[in-house]
Image (cartoon, rainbow, N blue to C red; front, side, top):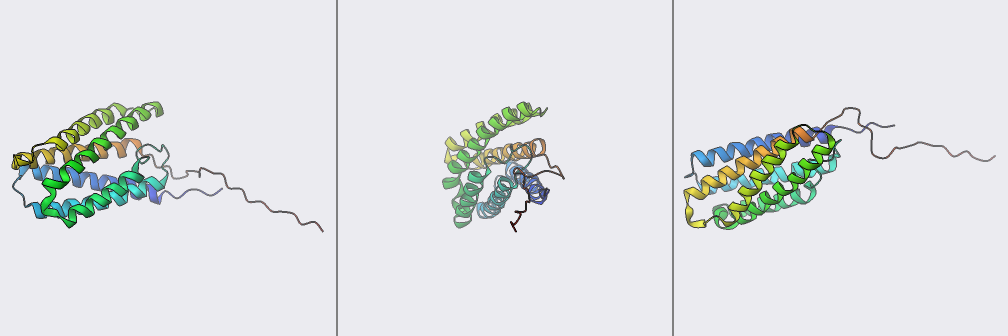
Length: 200
């Protein structure tokens, strides 16, 4: 029986961790320096979203052991790539165009990870409650971001930073607690080699 390669799972997990940390750093920068150039921020953020979308697609097709953290990542991966491309095409318009879309994405991500946290409890993962708590906080931030007044200027930038920070922490926690890499993981379908005897 062939052993499934863990390379896609490891790539997805490492990618998740790196991008989540990058989102946290970007969020902190927005909170500390809300006067940052929108063009620079839009370009960096667009690239991050595209990379995160690609990582999520790799995660979805990697078939990790628990099937928790990556189970909704096909749709989210494609959506993040599309939004990332849109931001790169119009980096200066991010506050007017993207905040609503980003709020919807983060709200949806929070809601799906609430479901993941409940399933994690059934799997016996001890820190399922932490994922649940972070999911609620991130979902609320996404909801507020959707309706945040666009004329708020620096205040909107600061809240966008808080939202990115909360979502980065949520994804970081989810991938660390819910993705289990087993070196000798068997494939889902048992492959049997057989030989057909010829009649002489």
